Amino acid sequence: MNTLIIMFKGLLIQAIAANIFTAGGTLFMSLILICLLVALFFLVKGFINVKKSTELSNKMLKLASDASLLGLTMGFLASIIGLISAFDSLQAMGNVDPAVFAAGLKISLLTATFGLFTFVISRIGITVLRLMLPSEDVSE
View 1 (cartoon, rainbow, N blue to C red):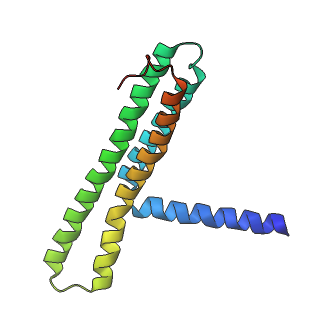
View 2 (cartoon, rainbow, N blue to C red):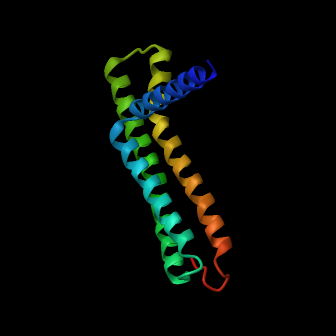
């Protein structure tokens, strides 16, 4: 019985995450997700090579930093594009219900939130990797 409840909760969380992902716009949300996965890949590769090659670890650190910044800026770009299109629709419709306006703003801000999430998660990994590297090898 407990396994069934845990499985149901897992499916519910996946459905909510998929709904949020789709509502934010699949194009930009997918690109931000790719930035997150690429940053995590570079971080893992950097962690693996800390003892073997600090030069390669330092390079992976810089690449992870670039990928996290790209995810952040893409999130804000998508948010601005969403806001512009929401205001264009409002201008075309004239008098709009505040609930419709609030829903449009929420959808517009989902990409910015996901971009910030990508940035924060990557930056935590970058900070830990910097702490593991010898101080003379870490450069920005």
